[in-house]
Image: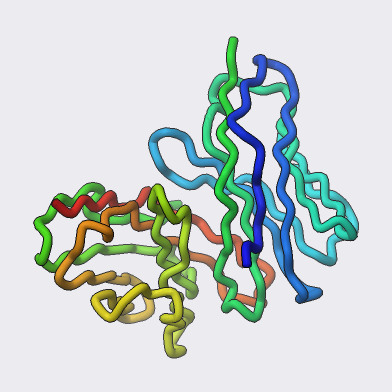
Length: 115
Length: 116
């Protein structure tokens, strides 16, 4: 069964605008971690932000914030004030303790920032 | 500090040949992971090493795939008798030990493998 779902098609966003990338997850474990990674065309996977299942506050890292809605099992990434360098694939991933902390990835969201 | 490094960055091989891919994790990271990224399958977990514990090999797709980690640091992923469906980007990641509070996995640049 798919554990991480990212279903949005490729997105175009105007420079300086905000963009929200959807991610829903499925787990029965009460302890888990959620991650977002960015993969530009060069191919490297860049860590952006982390949310623990017990964290009370939504995670923020600079222009990135995570809208964590635990009851709905969603962990949407918000990128504020988009920049041209934000054009990339974005992957949502979940770490499950019983899975030896391996990451289960979604299929990714393609974002293109236009000037 | 230095991040995760992988070599080679690109590898072209002929079907049936063996290949070795290398990963050098971040210094001090005891956990090391291999993932594979292909067009059809997305990102898949392959194998996990933590310290001196037995590795979790549950993600390896066939017995042609094996990996080792010597001295708790550098890891080598070996694919024997390569097939065209092995063509993919092989990504290595490392992290602090699970349960330490710092389990974020940091990825290397990957090895792009093409099997002709």
